[in-house]
Image (cartoon, rainbow, N blue to C red; front, side, top):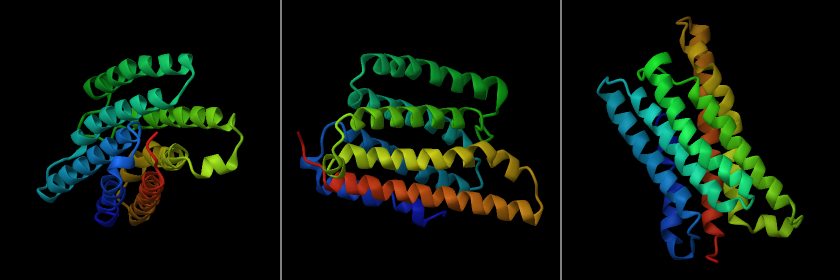
Length: 211
């Protein structure tokens, strides 16, 4: 959970680098998202090894992750209303994050308010894209569509992570062995979902053909 999964981000990054000339420009946003993810994980591990609280990184990462994924969905969604809503949220959500860590949840605590909110919004993006893609009603086209596989990865990870983020403070607030085991179990689920997303991204990059 602490090493194998963070390092596994190199799998989709490596596939994207090898297939770089075939990767669609829109999918490059996912490549940049993976680079951000890997860099933040690396810094978080370094800070933890030096006994430094790394949660401020998570607050910053939440904003950057949201902006990158929002920009990605602006590019792939065709509905003007949906795109305008996303543009509005790209301004509103970072402000909510800043207000949260300034007045409500310390930047040195897990952001259990804004993290689940981000997850719900990204899930809405993902479902909107599936609704758009479903209009084609072509299973073969779906199986060969890189964006579909990337979107499946995003929806799988974020839908599972909603539970983890919502209850992380609850499970870490108690020191009994029972709650420690529960917390470990929950974060192992999170790690498995993250690994699944990376593998789905890898497949998306692998079958990608520049249009």
